[in-house]
Amino acid sequence: MILEAKMAASCCTNGSVSTRSGDFLLTVRFVEEGENPMILGNPIARGNTAKIYLSDNKIVKIFNDFLPDTESIKEANKQSYAYSCGLPVPKILEVTKINGEQAIIMEYVKGETLGDLMFKNKEQAEYYMNVSVDMQLKVHSIIPEGIESMYDKLYSQIETVNNLDKKQKSYMLNKLGSFSYENRLCHGDFHLFNLIKTETQVVVIDWVDSSAGDIRADIYRTYLLYSQFSSELADMYLRLYCEKSGLLRSEVSQWAPIIAGARLSESVSSENSERLMEIINNYCPII
Ligand SMILES: Nc1ncnc2c1ncn2[C@@H]1O[C@H](COP(=O)(O)OP(=O)(O)O)[C@@H](O)[C@H]1O
Ligand SMILES: [Mg+2]
Image: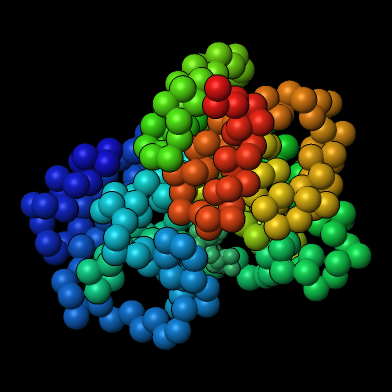
């Protein structure tokens, strides 16, 4: 699918092509520079990889130009897949280029993130965390078809980390292959700031890291993300997930060195990478 889109992009600079990915038909519109009538104004949010605009009651996500030119298609496909599973996810409306930058146009979800709500009402932290865990359980109940394998994703992430000892790397890659589990849909970046509360429901955004894999790895990943800024929040999260699912903390933490190792491949601060190295050294010391 990605190759198809790339080929289409190289053979036509204007007009429209449709590409099929699994069951999804994505229309990719190629717009000449200066031709797009869309007025974006100021972004409503800025992330590591994209700027988010609200235009004509739709969300326009414009990707930073250092990303591979398949990034928008990759994210749109994953999000469309989650949408097709019946999960509350913004519908992808278009994958396009705006002023030469890759962009996704999707449904606007009116509301606030559970993260923002929690910071406004700290005494309600456990309530918001409960809501988020219920949603993650829903995502994890889905047996996925045709989306990226978590194993492949983690394997290539760990392989690309430079500052890991050779022995540690091979320990992690071996351990990664040693788990047995049933593939489930994993969001890959599940936390309170990727959940928007509307008047009627909670919607899950930001599907670019989703994959088919072991829910315990996905749970550890969420735990690790929280623990970077609050161990209290991280513990609350893990306690609630374990209570609701019957999983044990020890089953989840088996994934610790692998998920910490894979996170080193992302651009994390030096303070965070020290913490990640501590986790890794704890499980597989350099001898
Ligand atoms: N469909 C949407 N509806 C409303 N707000 C959105 C939507 N998608 C993204 N946002 C806003 O933009 C922010 C960043 O979007 P996100 O997809 O999470 O990108 P990032 O990868 O930068 O975290 C979100 O926290 C949310 O505030
Ligand atoms: Mg996000």
